Length: 288
Ligand code: NAP
Image 1 (cartoon, rainbow, N blue to C red):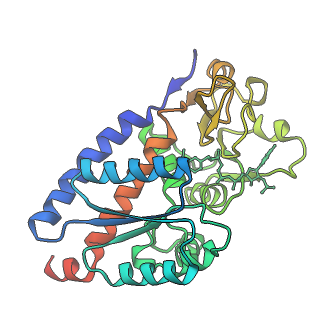
Image 2: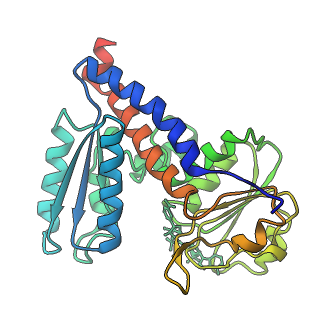
């Protein structure tokens, strides 16, 4: 292996120490940061994700509430719950776990969350703020990727970054964050022709597709930084990313593993966003 590992578990541990200290300081002033996680339906993967998020809150001294509803919950009832959480002063961040059942308009629910509590960063107000470079909540996964680049002291200015994937929650915000740091950014998607020709030019590749082996060793410039957002299962049922880790680690300069890479960083940035929402909450800000 020539590449150095960017260890998401180790970086998360370090960042969570700071989060716990800041959360304790808020708690001492009677303003414990609070996250509400709303889960509709019985999707097994979603159940694991929400449990991990709630546990991460508890481990770092944040207050968390898990609201679980059957898949039959109506859109109106879900919107009413979001409205109540918007007005709850003990809750600073609201996360509605996606995907939602088909009869619920997910975008409508996201837009119902107060932008001040939009710790997932999916509201159009958050997306717009990122677009124009104003303060706002950044989506946790690409935010975590940026923290990983920061952790290795990587200077993005003038570098060519290739983002594979253009979803609203990963690919597009990732590209905007890289652009904000003055990288030259190429966004690839399912219609991109000759992906390899583009990735071979990249100093940084972020793979956010959801398909195994989207990025193989022959597609990577020697020394490049490779960030693997993908979460897939291999033939043995084990978690793996979009990157052929075994091959790419011998070409890249830096690489994130799956598991233990972007995944833990995503939850860590959710804690950061919730903490910052609490620090900016009117009652806390007034007494600061
Ligand atoms: P998504 O909404 O399904 O988007 C996937 C993107 O990949 C789309 O833009 C799609 O292009 C593009 N794509 C599909 N096939 C491609 C190909 N052969 N070549 C190039 N691009 C291709 O997925 P997502 O929500 O962004 O998530 C992506 C992956 O990251 C998934 O594995 C997901 O589980 C994982 N993820 C991980 C974390 C974490 O915490 N580690 C968090 C979020 C997501 P089109 O737009 O043209 O369809």
